[in-house]
Image (cartoon, rainbow, N blue to C red; front, side):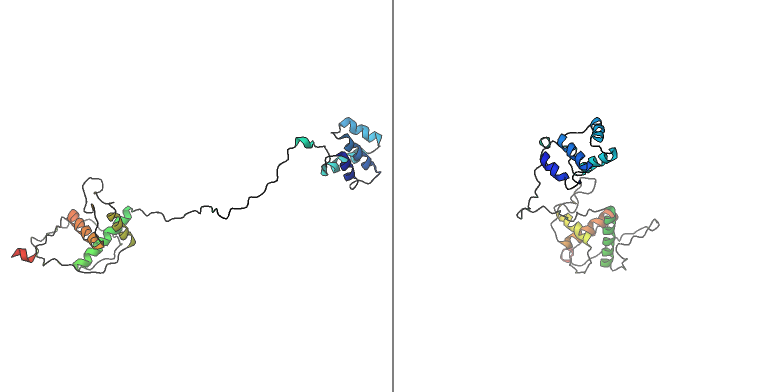
Length: 228
């Protein structure tokens, strides 16, 4: 309530008419300003009213927001905030939780090496050990006597069923993408430079390079029609 008349009407519901508190409240409202300590003492003598009762009148007026008087012109009115209805045509971008790419680690290459050893054991007919199992063995100097001569019949392709792990497929895809063009730490071209073969080519090249580089086991093939 901004006008004095409205404030006077409001206190009629809070104070009993013709009571001392009612008279004090009407006098305070009419001043429309803060009441000093000297004026409060004079009001106690003039009405008369007890000082404690007068303090209660001020308390009630504060609860009713009638004292101290507010200068409404100095208080900027805030426009009511309205919530903006969401635009159905606009969709907030969802958080794409795409699977992160898996990178090969040293342990991954160790697993690949064990898988190759397992594959070599299957091809050679030796009892294979479980792939993926790594057992640390004592280093021993084993003298390997390579055969002086080996005769292999006409080149042929043998079909074998081999279980391939997902990481091995990943190495195959990376080889086709040119990831393993050079040997690590060198500029020497590896066997997978410009590789565009299938999974069989991948394993055959992998086996040849593995045994040639580590064991110098290069096996040459001589077709029967050229050996006569």
